[in-house]
Image 1 (cartoon, rainbow, N blue to C red):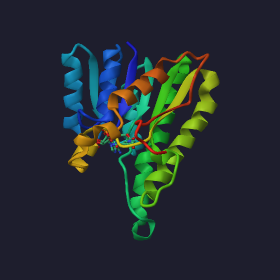
Image 2: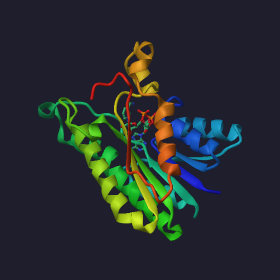
Image 3: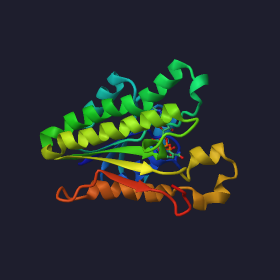
Length: 236
Ligand SMILES: NC(=O)c1ccc[n+]([C@@H]2O[C@H](COP(=O)([O-])OP(=O)(O)OC[C@H]3O[C@@H](n4cnc5c(N)ncnc54)[C@H](OP(=O)(O)O)[C@@H]3O)[C@@H](O)[C@H]2O)c1
């Protein structure tokens, strides 16, 4: 059975969880990975009770041993791997501790390198597989108050582009989805209490998941590297 790994899974109304549910519904066995066991088990149980196959695995995306061990459990039919970890890390540069900047880079960018390397190592024997990364507005532009996050997301995007060029001829499709705006999910609803009233200005999770599914389904004769998604209200 074809297998997908999604790392960076949190609440049910979050992008990671909804990616897991979509690809399980499309018939893949899904490894549901992240740091919080309870959240992972909740999503995996939802999938199995709807007739799908899911395996929750606790893994910190910045820990090399965790990432290698997680891929060791994927089996030899790994067909899709999605790097979704990367919580926002706001802060102005002059007040920022060096460790804060470094930790932001570790989660957002370095973890993408570990994950991408292990995914491609497992996909190359089959000469097929799709590796996708979640981007943000930060992937494309620096913004005051977000220097740590912007630089790490931009680094992740360029890493993904390099990998796309390095492994395309060997059958590996690498792609990047730019989510240009706040997502209509738990992260924003918790942080901004009236966000639900402004739903039209928030990016729909289902729409973002559609972009991932589009990249995954593309024929090798018409691959895209990147899809960007934003609401009609976004000024960009
Ligand atoms: N939310 C937005 O408005 C927004 C906008 C644009 C782009 N994005 C991007 O979309 C992705 C996340 O979407 P989301 O905000 O809806 O969150 P989400 O997919 O619901 O959750 C992502 C989860 O990643 C996990 N995570 C964080 N660090 C990790 C690590 N080192 N190892 C493993 N897992 C880790 C966190 O869970 P734990 O804390 O339990 O570990 C978090 O809940 C990120 O790449 C983000 O940059 C988000």
